[in-house]
Image 1 (cartoon, helix red, strand yellow):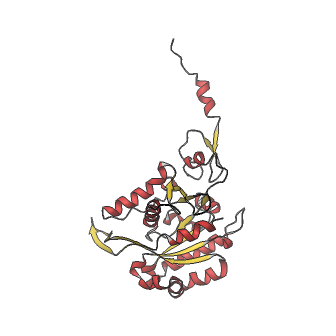
Image 2 (cartoon, rainbow, N blue to C red; image 1 turned 180 degrees about the horizontal axis):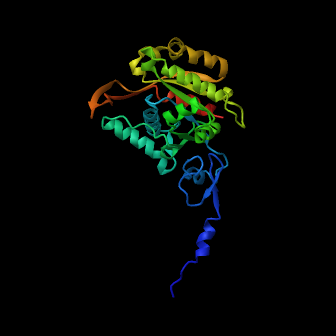
Image 3 (cartoon, one colour; image 1 turned 90 degrees about the vertical axis):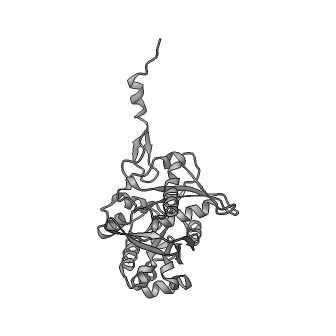
Length: 296
């Protein structure tokens, strides 16, 4: 006799909910992403039996600042290490951003911009080996620059983003050094608004004024002065950000990075498209090495 499962038994499974690690909302047991913040529920399953929850870090940048490339390259470099600081990805979803960035750069393209909808964000959950202490687990979402800009212009218009930032224990703010060197004030205004927003964000733990923030001058291959003295470069080219940092932040450091050596521009189907000339990372690991031990 063939056995047939009862429908009531199937329905009983749905009585068991899954609490999202990021926002705490309850979800059906077979859901892929949280219905509220759209974070992958694989994060919740992976840390279910851990005594210590992983730390979270935000990487914030306006569109076109090289955030996704930066995250992919720094992940690739740390994964190739041996011993202290070696990165091990947790979950297949944590490899997606890393693979996309490396594959695109190898083929001579920059990765596409991060999708505005959080359902399209990549998440990296990784374990970093420590020199003396136990390994540290870190979660980093690839936050959309356009979504962040909308949230800065109209706070609480992107509730999922507000939830993620409350959970993070530190952040890196990427600013395009090439644009700043040319006198473009847009990166300065983005960082100024970003620091103001974070300092006013209500949190259950200690506020953002005491959390570590790394100011990262990306694309510094186009502004060699940034590598010489990133603090002095920022003070000269982004005065608004400099004064806001002095006013609101207690734990801050300045870095200059570059993932490629030069960029070429071509017309493709009528649009101006950037192409990396050479993949030549410089200074990409230092901001992460400074941030992770200080995450709240």
